[in-house]
Length: 302
Image (cartoon, rainbow, N blue to C red; front, side, top):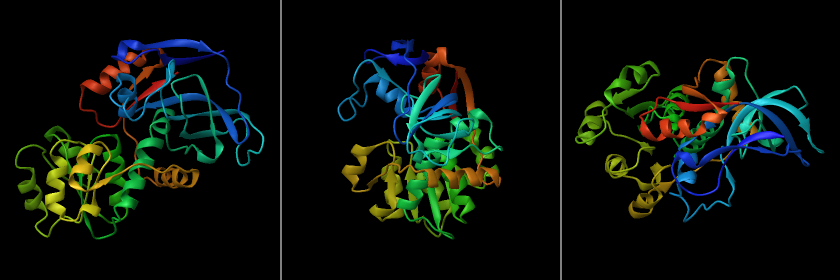
């Protein structure tokens, strides 16, 4: 048997429960991972609450989690490149668990430079950030505005962009300004007057914008950039449709994840873990995720 976090109805964090389930067995092309850390995503809280039920309904009882790091302990047929004992990270549906099976093609070897919790929090945010920078066509010498730069995806996007020679302006509350400066970004405070503050630090203009905040940040981003195809959001699809800007997603692959792992090994990419919770405290982890401005990611540790 293996423990996993389930929920039987939409609702607050209290609907989450820990249950014993049969041990999962890997099928063709899959490996089983003994989970050492699983990232908690804003998407997880939206699935649990029912906020996404109109376009991403779940079947009850439902499981949560879509990224993990751990040790391979079983491999299915047709798997190459991984063997029992390998330390890996990557996408894994139902990752709030002691053990999970996933597609071996989506995994990468865990860098020794990362702790288990850091590795467990890298995959989703890192690959989303990598994908959206690719889709926005951000290149060296350009200026990029990132709204919610101190969040999970924002922090990854800041570092990846800076490593590629991009000038990054990041919105955040003042308590995170020195932190963002340390990563090579130019911080500005969000809220009324944002456009003027951005223009003050970027009189030459802004070439592209990534929105991870929602609200009026997307309208302001479009006003600053002026080109709808170079403005995108990962959190406000309705606003993207209204404004004609890009609704951005993620593309996950073992090769993309391996590139991020190499950046971490080279010291170009750091993973910031806000807090760790045991698997049995998944409800508390969700309350923390929904109730505070986080710097980085929350991680469940079975």
